[in-house]
Length: 293
Image (tube, rainbow, N blue to C red; front, side, top):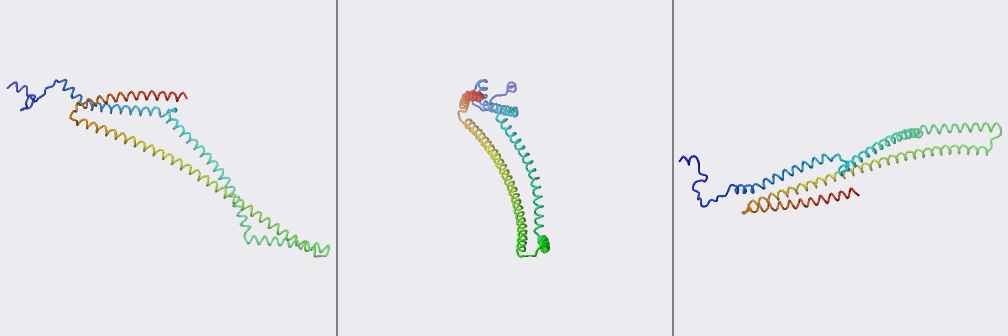
């Protein structure tokens, strides 16, 4: 009774000892290690992926400021393009300012000419000019008549010549007014043409900027689509691995299947390592050849 109290039974009661299999402790430990090996390997793989990701991030941070990489060259090109666009924009603003000052001077002159023309085109000024011209002509005619009368008698030929002189004076004044009108119209058309050309140039510049913005937007959309595809593919691979793992765990011969799978995974790792090593060697050769070229 004291022995039974000090050392309790290891097996539950009512157990047939003939149906119990006794294995050594080392064998039992080996079986447990085989069952837990996949879990440990999964944890090791996760840790390895995490370390690779951290190393990749550190590498990106290190090479971010390098100028001899594709990303650095792209960044330099973008910076150069930005600087070039800023210089072009500054030059265009200077030209626009100079053109605006020039146009303001021309516009002011045209406005003054238009005001003067409008002033001359009013009925009051027209009547005044006509009356003034008529008075001058009449005065000149009277003076000539008096002069002619003082020397010779008036004759028909002298009157016709005087009439021709008056008509000629009227005609020259009319031609001069028409010429001034044509010059003002031509100047106004030239101003309108310059304004239209400036508007067309501004419209083409806006279209180029919109086209560049659309191209950048399209590149960003393609990059996002590619990243989503990669993420979806990675998720599918994880689900597929999990499904395969569960299928193997549910098999009747689980120990044998796990060992076989472990062996296959080891072989696959070896093949991948050899393949990756060959790829790295090939990439190194190609990079060396490209550098040599």
